[in-house]
Length: 283
Image 1 (cartoon, rainbow, N blue to C red):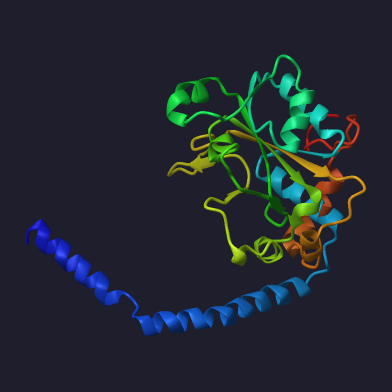
Image 2: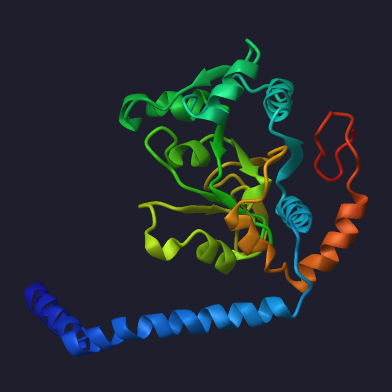
């Protein structure tokens, strides 16, 4: 059999397996019923646990991120820029890649010391690939929301803060607002109405990049940032959003709740005003 014959046979099998128009129409018609069944499943599962309030979601987000080897600080809207600027300087970060045009980026730009250079993503990657990979110490992003039950950040890359910002630098720094946290992925999808339209690229980040070989030796940074810092920011004086109200109606799982009670009690207080350091860090 030559290559053309093999190609023809493969295409014929694909065409034969493709659904016809009638079956496709049936599938579309069944989609709402399937969605309702999925919603009902998660509603029943959440009803088995006590409702999680906003504070519990924030605690769970911190604990699960720390379990994935992320460093976490809890702070407020007024204090986070100075807190992060100090941490970056102390860590030896000299070049920080981020979008300085957004409100968070502008606030961070004003707080950065002269030793930390703000770098904007303004050129095609082909024009500065070597500079990007060799000289950028960290990237800063603002998460759309977070999933407390797994310690997951929901990122929506755009032209000013593409996926590269959270993927290439060895340190990824993310800010997530406490009033955007959801109990689980389903709660996030429903509260944010992902079914109405999703971006081209939606990224879920649950800790720094990690992989292991056949001997199960864990290594960090092989396919992305070695380290992840997360700032969970409280918007002082701001009522919970509708998304949070929906998330609060759910709950973290029983396993997370058990880990939460033990880990939160062990989390030390911080000498930094408005901030709670990551577990195990000295104040």
